[in-house]
Length: 217
Image (tube, rainbow, N blue to C red):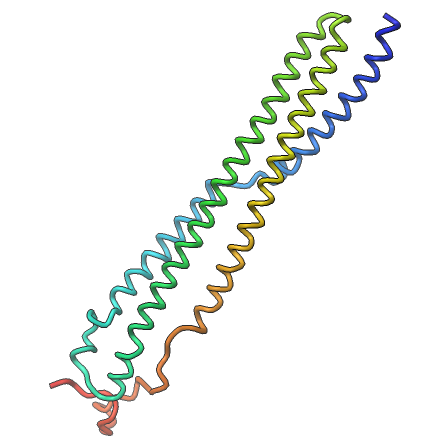
């Protein structure tokens, strides 16, 4: 008995350290679990509230669909016709941008699901090892083997968790770069929107100068 006491005591210290390291590794997961479903909800809002309506508007303002194309003539009318295609393209670009944001959020949600699964496997490995260790520890003779088993399970789980966290962090770096680029594209939308340098509100029907808008007879 005395010969077993010291190895068991040392083994328990190792197990204590390994178990503490194991819990430290998953603490961030516990504190910041994330919400894959909420990410998917937000991604669908980008599609339903932004991409689809803007896409519809882009179709409505296409030059062949505008009455102004056939009902009006004059300098303002021509200037208006000139900028409409670029504005329709701009709206299509906004739609595409919204869909890119949706896809980015979905990718993040999928990565979060994969992260949960991998963390669950790591915890499962530890639990299975712990259960086996408890069974082995039913006798004093089996205690050293039980200690080794639980220490091994903790080490394997820590390795899995470390790999999982590193993979997730790498993916998050990619997503951050992607979303930074998307943020810049959103910022640039206002700068690239096509405008006319003519006063499109100056109608010759009301001011009589005959140079801007005229009803096409």
